[in-house]
Length: 440
Image 1 (cartoon, rainbow, N blue to C red):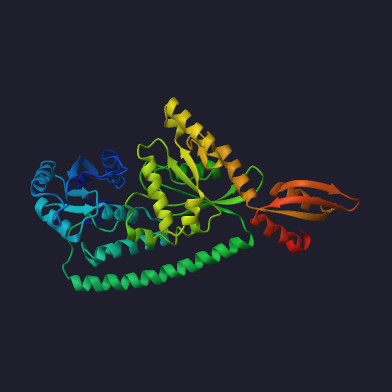
Image 2: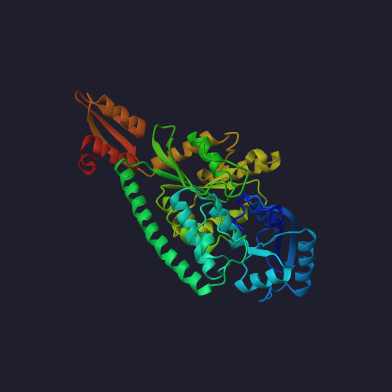
């Protein structure tokens, strides 16, 4: 059987039971019901028919089956009664646990990592995105070998974690997977070099980069479209956007920037994916401003914030997190009046790093653009410049792209004190062919 997205998938195989193991006696920041809802959303994101979903308290994980025998039997009865062809266990399963549960329940079993990889495999559209996801899937699969090599070469999305057991030539599969991993890493190194060349090209016309990050379904793509008037795919669906998208962004001052929309993060993000998407997330690492888009109406909004910051730290962005990201508190249109007032007061108290906003209605978007302008300007140097009065275009350019703090004119020249951000400073140097240090 092919992946879930295939036309030949029958209804029985798409019938799915979702199980969220909830450890007892822990102070986890997430609500079990919110985690179960998220797991169901992940399943529905690839058109699985969730016929049953349950939170299962877990006192102590069993090495062989995760759950105790009584729970395994009870869940097996539910799977049989619902005629489910797939069981999703919303945690990490060892290969032994996965195999034993499949034998006990007589159905296909995947864990949270396998499900997320399957979604990514189906959704990635660019060549780079597909390679990154395949590398992650192969790294995960090498320890399990749940599919034969031929299924990994399907042209359509998904990675076959939802299919049958495949061939049993484990050593042959392991060797072929290892060889494919080596080839993919070499190809991704080439992609990385190409991306570096693109960044160098942008450096010659240096626009600041503003990167949107956030938990999946937080509204990043909706905000991206609102600010750039682009038409990136927007759905009320987990992982609707996987491949990075970049567009020019015109700020109120006339300053230009590049806005980057990135893949959504998720709790317990497979470590294979963090490594594989490092090249994509290089745009975040190179960004002048990182904007964390939060779904402030979500019951687990605070825990989602912590998950995103943990991934950013894993990427080496501790300084950016510690310094304070811009937090867009999105979906304020979904809040009741009392909660909305509380959020707005919180933003007022914490100054410029909190921005209440509705990407759907546009409320708060102009204020966010003004904030970008102020932050980019604040990062600039104050320069004393002299231009001929005849260079009206150059003087006008400084007014458009910088903050003119003072000006005095004599008979021939305009003397200006201007604050310019690094990007516009470099553009001014190229435009006038002057050394800033000689004239500041």
